[in-house]
Image 1 (tube, rainbow, N blue to C red):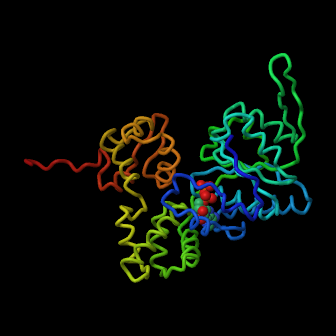
Image 2 (tube, rainbow, N blue to C red; image 1 turned 120 degrees about the vertical axis):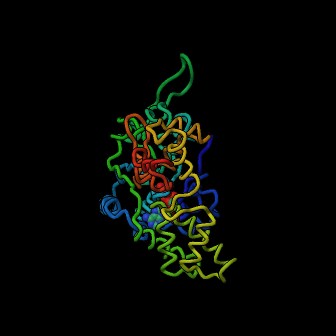
Image 3 (cartoon, rainbow, N blue to C red; image 1 turned 90 degrees about the vertical axis):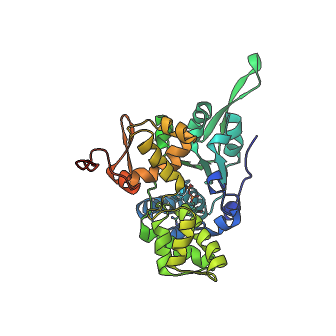
Length: 353
Ligand code: ADP
């Protein structure tokens, strides 16, 4: 059975799950950069204010916080909120992943271990199998679960009381959640991309944590190239630090950041090689679309989930590509980004040429 130990809020950070997509990061450094308190989080002000009120009210009334669903693209702070909230409440935290909870028996130990008022964070909650989801409903609503003991004619169902606790679910795909599950979360919050000023603030704070000399121009350059995503900003910052250490006596100026990011293949808009390959495939192979995402994923030899969860959200938001009922279509801005002209805008051939 895959489950992680019960953690006190203070111990939680070292166990925060590091996903494959953050593999290039040194795990302990990533932890060093993750804000430890809600008030240290930058941006997401409206979400922060609402969660703050809910957390403070739960504290004042000494009641468990209502269940919370956080959704949004990867790297925007869902896990960070989920680890900061129990700290603010001074309660323990357990961390589970939807993909690892294959059957109700996998979830049961988390439910029975949940201390009064504690938080159970379920990452990738859209990946919970239906049977686990249904098993969770009474736990979320009435803090009770029905468990079947014995088998065949000897089987009997026991109704087990749980200590009141809070589930924080995180998902990159709230659309995949069933309506009954979604409705059981009292508070549902969507995390959006960060603006450049917020990313600069994160970059400046993290440069200090990494004891790095970074000038304002470099912070601006890295922020502009971070796809609106703090995790990407942290990755880029660390790369610029390595580059500056080896090539510029440790001093990260705008030019140094520019050269370091160029070496990664990151362009002025912050797109990397994979992003450009996606746009180019739609343009060249599918004549600008519309094209189904499955066809693009197959052509790129990529998992559809990776494409829809990690590559597309920023490109859609940057209006380089649009989603239509018939599939993805490159926009005029998308063509422009690739240095091409949209069909119909090509200059007419000159007479005699
Ligand atoms: P998600 O769970 O949404 O994939 P995380 O919470 O793991 O994203 O965030 C990735 C990293 O980005 C964190 O380790 C943290 O360093 C940084 N980060 C995320 N949100 C913020 C924020 N609001 N302020 C500062 N840093 C943040």
